[in-house]
Length: 263
Image (tube, helix red, strand yellow):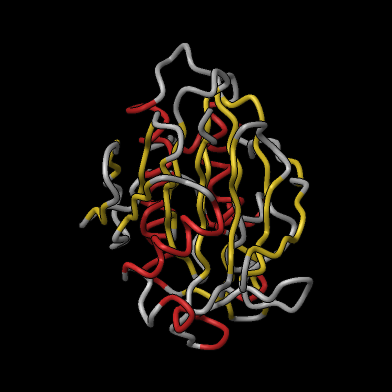
């Protein structure tokens, strides 16, 4: 945890908007990022009814194989913790896990979100990549810094892309989250207001997940070569509507994937 003095000097990691395109794959409309040659990564808002009613049913694998031309997939269960598994081999769902790492081409990593952040990480050598589910609880357990420290050696330079999550304008928060963030940051509330991690409207407090992640990663500036963000959020209308639990209490989820193409 940072001291108040170091916090006063700390800023946010620099970020830039990522380029993307919309693409039709079978019955799916997808957001696909024009970022890392040889990799496929993005999101789809395919309804779970189209996948047999549940995210983790075998129909999902069949659809992935059909639409994305990958050989296997690994899915994180996601329980809002900081556990990350390195995976390989046949398709599997990993219980008690919120992040996945692999070095196996043709193997898709999958998570589902409806306001939390999908975080894509790749090293500059294209030899290891990760996909992390990061809500406020995961961020308060340092899930993304732990992935960098545990799975990407000090010599590895990395690039990170943060996909769509809830916007700060729609993320009204209460005492538990505020207390946890203040404890982890080691900052005064006023300092986090200055950094726009929190903002206040009359008596209501709002929280910016991406700015908090950028704050957490500011100490990794020499390791992180590029940090990209998707220029949109869940629960808003746009080119492609993205499911938001907070905005509509939907049971549907946005599916994020990454895999390195074989061959």
